[in-house]
Amino acid sequence: MTTSARISQSAFDGSRLRVILLLDLYEGAQQQFLEAYDLMRRQVATVPGHISDQLCQSIENPSQWLITSEWESAPPFLAWVNSEEHVETVKPMHSCVRDTRSMRYSVLRETGVREPLAQASAGVQVAPRVGDGVARHALTFTVKPGSESKVAELLAGYESPKAQVDETTRLRRTSLFMHGNRVVRAVEVEGDLLVALRHVARQPEVRAVEEAINPYLEQDRDLTDPESARVFFTRAALPAVQHVVSSRPAPAELRRHALYYPAKEGHGMELAQLLARQDAEAAEDPDSPVYGSTVFHRDDIVVRLIDITGDLDLDPVASLGLKGPRKAAELERLLDGAAIGVEGSLTTDRNINRLLSHADMLPVTDRTSAES
Image (cartoon, rainbow, N blue to C red; front, top):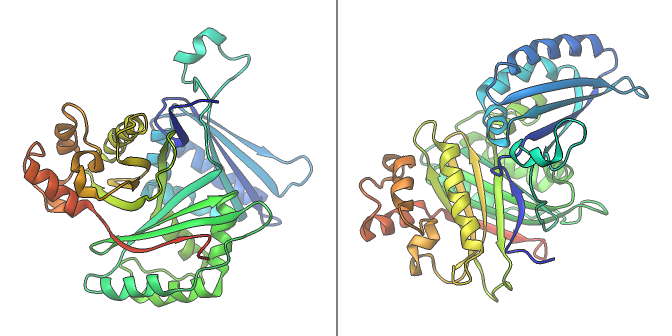
């Protein structure tokens, strides 16, 4: 099969989204859970982009439940699921649920709902994406100003957990960066992402580091308290909204960088879409120094992880994802320049170079499974 770019994840193709939530309830909590769900569904029904949802109970095991929901596209769902409103909405369910598992799928084909010829314009994904068998996710949180060097030392110094989680799941890479007092930890997992994350969280060496950085966090957390841990990791989630890799042979040497793009209030998704479009085009350009890219987004935080040939400053425009007419002006409109210390027009070489310098995050650690 020939393709111009390998895309393992994309939230921006315009297709409808099917969300599947598997739940395992505590014994005797079914009625309490049903009441909590009825409250939640009334609130979710008012969220822009929501189409419908269904609640199902297993005919074989009454403690196993399933919630499916349909959304006009991925962006409105992601905006809601990563919001404080969502955190508060689902709280009444926590005391009922022993375990959950969430999966998100774009609609590729369907039967009996719309005519096949109309599917392309009815929010159905036109062509299958080609993946590499790797799931990507990131967490972001802030530490108290003045503690950055200590936190970086702690995060860089831990012993990596065993890479092989089970027969089908393996930790492939962990990349950790800082920008001021903001920490971003990106992981790549072959197999089941949730299984891998839970495996890592249980490792003594990881737990020791997490406990060691607790006093420095701006948001308090108690990882021994399931509710505190759940809220922290919900708020820290920085989902990957697109991943693109060029189809050309991988260069002998690639350097990984993370670039931080704080968006103006309410423009985070639009900024993430701009960068995603740019990286999709770069993947088709044989002369682009950007070989692979993952765009992460939450609220007004956008982080772009790139694997690049050569140094960033050899081609600042490509490194920032600004190639093409008016792309710099589009980024200037969406970017919170004051927050990153770069104000003024991005049409000048001076400001583009300043933005690249200010957006480039400090690498703390980058570990592959071979090192683990």
